[in-house]
Length: 245
Ligand code: ADP
Ligand code: MG
Image (cartoon, rainbow, N blue to C red; front, top):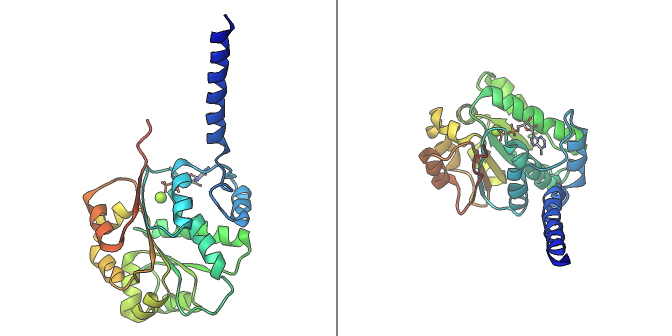
C-alpha cells in the first residue's frame, strides 16, 4: 500500500535532484575566474547564471579548443567567448611587453564593433587588470588607427575590411600578428561572409599562426560558415544549440 507512494516520492526526489543540478550550474563551476564573476554581478543587469551556450562553450574555450558555436540570436554568445578570452589574457597581462595584439575579434559591422568593444572594456575595467582593448573601424583615418595600435593593445575589435586597411597602410604588420596572435574570434560569422568580406578574411587567415585558438560564433548554420570553418579551424568542437520555441 505504501509502496507506490514511496516510489512516487523517490521519483520526485530524483526529479528535484536533476533540477537542482541544472540550477546549480554556475560560472564558478565552469572554471571562470572570480574577478570575472564579480564583474558580471556588477553589471546593470546582473548576470548570475550561464546560458546554455555559455555552459558548453566556456569550459571548452578555457581548455584551448577551437569552437564553432551556433545558437540563435540573444542566446549570450558574446559573453560565451569574451569571458574565457579575457581569462586567458589575465595570465599574460602585465608580463613582458608585447609587440603586437594577442586577440582579434572580427565582427561584420562598425555598430557591432562598438557594442563588443564596450562590453569587453567594461569587463576589463571591473576586473582591474592591465589589459587594453581598442576598436578599429574603417571610418578612422590612418593616423588614428596608428595611435590606437600604439602600445600595442591586447585585444582588437574590428571588421575584416579595417584589418585590410591597417595592413595596407602599414599600421599592422602581418609578421607581428603571426608572432603574437593567440585567439581569433569571428563573431556573427554567417554575416561576416555575406558582407563580402571573404577576400579580406582570407588575407588575414593566411598569417594566423597554427597555434592560434579560433572561435567562430554564428546564428545559423550555412554553407558559408562551413567554408570559413575549413579556412581557419583545424579540428573544432561544433556546438549547435537547437532552436527552442
Ligand atoms: P547573441 O550574440 O547570442 O545574439 P548576446 O551575447 O548579444 O547574444 O546576448 C544577448 C543579451 O543577453 C545581452 O543583453 C546580454 O547582456 C544578455 N546575457 C548574456 N549572457 C547572459 C546571462 N548569462 N544571464 C543573463 N543575461 C545574459
Ligand atoms: Mg552576437
